[in-house]
Amino acid sequence: MKIVSLVFLALMVVLPSVVVSSTPPQKDVPAEIDSARRALQNARNDLDHAGTDWGGHRVNAIKHVDAALTEVNEAEKYAREHHDKK
Image (cartoon, rainbow, N blue to C red; front, side):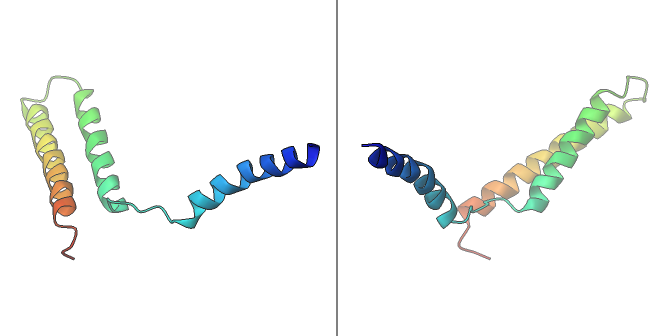
């Protein structure tokens, strides 16, 4: 009975790792897009915390960063919808 339990335990440990490692993870978004999105989000956060005395230019910069983030999201959406085109 002890051997059966050990075999069962070994299978529980080994099989999930085989299933997980047998198919390589597929990334839908290239690393460069993720990096660009993080950089834009960090820039927006920095601008948000930069104070208020910038003659309206900080607010305009935030709008431009928001527009860039929207474009990145739209690009990702387009890529998902047209994944057959390279």
